[in-house]
Length: 259
Image (cartoon, rainbow, N blue to C red):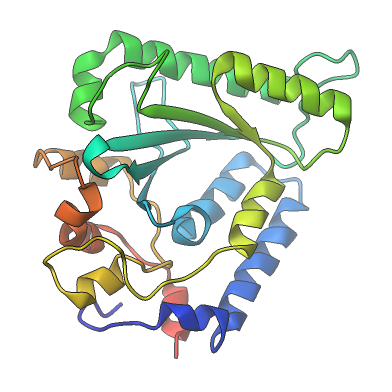
C-alpha cells in the first residue's frame, strides 16, 4: 500500500462496490459453515477495519495476552478525546453456538464466554501495573465507571422472546454486551466510508486520509506491546498518534483492487 497518496475511500460505496460486496458474501458464506472458532477469528482479523472501525476507532488488537493462560480475541481501541481511551474486549464463539440448552440454562460455549470475561475482569483488578502499562487511560476501575467494555459475539440472531429476555438479563447483570454474528454482518453492511478523519491533526491531509483506511488488519500482541513501550499520549489518542498508527497497521491485499 502506498502511504504517500490519498485514496478515495468513499468510492467503496459507488465506484468500487464490488469489493465490499465480495467481503460480505465471503463472510455470510463463512458463518453458514460449522468451522473451528479460529476460522471466524482469522476473517475478522484480516478485515478488522471493515468490521470494527468508525469515527473513534481505528485500531484493533488481536489476541492480546493478559497472562500465560488468558488472552483476548479482540480489543477495539476507542478514542474519547480528552476523556482518554475505552478498550472494548471481545470474546467470540461460533455462529453455531447456542445461548441456552434445552433446560433453559446457559449452554456450554455461552458459559465458557461468560467465564472468560469474569477471568479477564479478575486479572485486570489484580494486576493494576500491567493494566496501566498496556491499557493506559484515565482509570483502572473495572466494576463501575470503567474504561473497559466487554462483549461476547455468539450464535445467530434469535427472535425467541424468552431467550432474548434471559440474554439481556445476563448482559445487564454482568455489565456486558452480547451480540450475534448477524450483528457483525449488520456492521459490515451499514459501513460508511470517509476520505478524511476528523482528528484536526497537524500531520496533513494524507495522514488524515490514511487513518480512515478500511483495509487495515488487526495488529498483534507483540505489535501493541512495542507500541506501548514508547509511552504514548492516550488523550486525543488518534490525533496525537495518527502517523505512528498508520505505519503500525498492516493492510489487506484487497486494497490493490481500488481504482
